[in-house]
Image 1 (cartoon, rainbow, N blue to C red):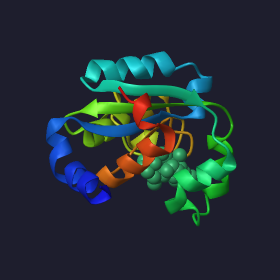
Image 2 (cartoon, rainbow, N blue to C red):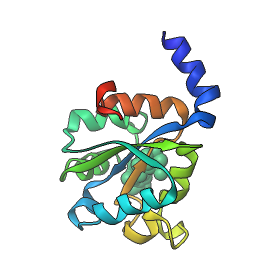
Image 3 (tube, helix red, strand yellow):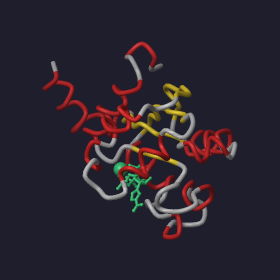
Image 4 (cartoon, helix red, strand yellow):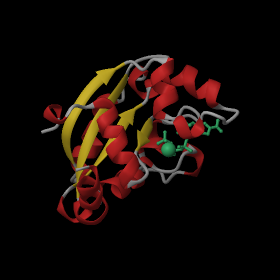
Length: 153
Ligand code: RTP
Ligand code: MG
């Protein structure tokens, strides 16, 4: 079953309506940019298939950003990501993973094109307003991290 899901995700889903996870980070929620960011996604042609607000625990940040656990900035990242609620969404559409990364802009808002979420709402490399899955595998894992199948429409 897992193998079938993997094959479907890697080869077919980009054409049929790929899904990705987007998370509005605590800085952007605090500054009340949730509505604007959701509006940008809806205008982009991606469909919002699931949506919720939640507050991450330090344990959840360790699991979610497991690849970065050894990085020197991880304590700062953990403090930031647990500093307030986040809004998580499943976005769906053609090449949703890549499209979302384009709409977000690069990690450092200073390097981002002016109309991207990070250029508009991010402050620096740490507090950069938005997260997006970066591959088909991370999209599956991150969507499952936050949503049960019956919460995705
Ligand atoms: P994200 O996972 O949040 O979508 O960001 P990303 O792919 O653009 O960047 P990634 O390398 O995965 O880093 C995850 C998040 O860690 C924080 N970070 N801080 N202070 C620093 O040098 C630094 N580097 C990364 C950011 O919040 C980044 O988005
Ligand atoms: Mg990343």
